[in-house]
Length: 262
Image 1 (spheres, rainbow, N blue to C red):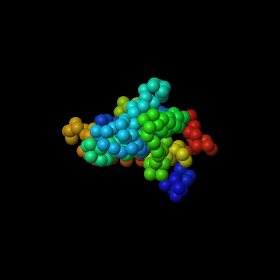
Image 2 (cartoon, helix red, strand yellow; image 1 turned 90 degrees about the horizontal axis):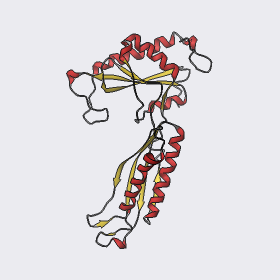
Image 3 (tube, one colour; image 1 turned 45 degrees about the vertical axis):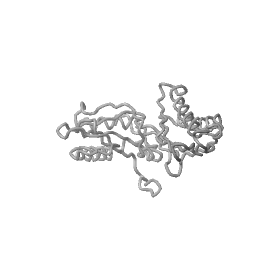
Image 4 (cartoon, rainbow, N blue to C red; image 1 turned 120 degrees about the vertical axis):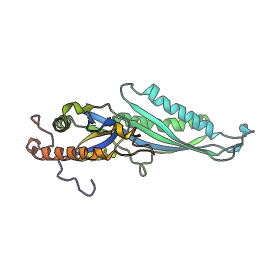
């Protein structure tokens, strides 16, 4: 959409995401970072295959990969500022061979996340250093990839302060102010964040919990189901945001900032 010019001459863009744990008719939002930036990585740890009964004749990539994973966890627990949320999660560990064979290589992979660009860059550098260094300690070799082409880095999703005040005003008038909840930042990522490279963005969560329907599973669960009764709330709120904003464009400054009076 950005490359095609679909958002040229657009002052601001709003997006929403359903939230199964938030009651229907309510929304959750916050000023500043709402979702973390994220990247993916994959590494192949290569050793020397051999019989499991003769490990002294092999270079065990499983042991090397295990040390890599443990050391990667230390990047958050020991190196990150506790007040600067960061995350490294391994979700892939693949070897091959029989139960009595040490494989010649192991592939691991995962995700890393942070709320600031500086922390994100540092975390990426340290992941690369740890993978290479720990593999070397076990006399193995490592090749890593951050999969920029297959899984591009997602920037953090950051809500602007002026649009936050505007959203609370519009949502409060439509839903009642007590149904506009303040949320904590989440380590999930959102591709909506790419829009902020070109225009002003604002993102919020739309509640869809209804006790009559029973428990609604997480949006990433294979048992996820949507409560379609929530959709009219989302559509009406997006329409109201667009209508009120378009009628108040005079409050936009030339560089796109919203006037304080809004």
